[in-house]
Length: 299
Image (cartoon, rainbow, N blue to C red):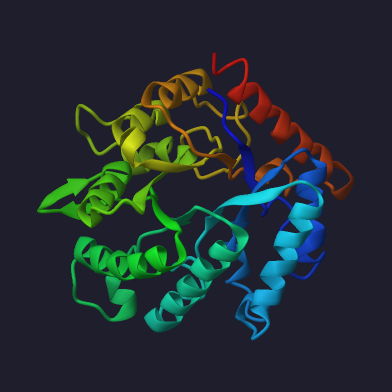
């Protein structure tokens, strides 16, 4: 099965550098015709147009830029509670509501969300799981209003669910299942699956093989991907084949579960760490890796 090859537009993210539209054009020039809008990065910039009264014009301009070059947005990443929104819940929810509206304008069907690591950061005494369940229940109101689904990402920590400690993937599964809504699913971050210290809790069925996690999530739940690699020790966000993930098995697992959404890279270190003259080559190579993975290796 083939998938739309997409990337977060954070490969060239530099809020004090080129404009958003110029960054979008560089991704398209690298070969990408499907794009993931990274509200996570932009919402962390205090003077970003995302926070201005003219934010809709900013989003419209991004959409028009992509469409003018034959591309479109097909996934997004919500603002992140770990950044400048970590102490003000009202501001965080305002940012998320705005991102939902922006996704509707862009035609994005699924937006990836982080769950909250510590409810106490918002002054809540609820358990982690109950806080997340209540928060995402509120977010589903925006999801249905805008026609944009919520894909809950496996992060660096899981949490207790009904007294049982869950690893990051199983926590995301349990949360999506508790929401019990067609607009609630899971995003599998392959790099996060492959970090030993977060996923090996000492149980016989623990794994750092993303393909096993994809099979466990299943086709009904899996709505989005964050594709990147590492060597099991850190969240490197490097391109496939530069780490130790078994990518042939990942592609088999996606085929087995009947995955039917976007193949989205979150491998910003394919370009960010390179000298400026080489950044575009790094982005082009990442796109070619997507072609290899979704083409010959998928078979």
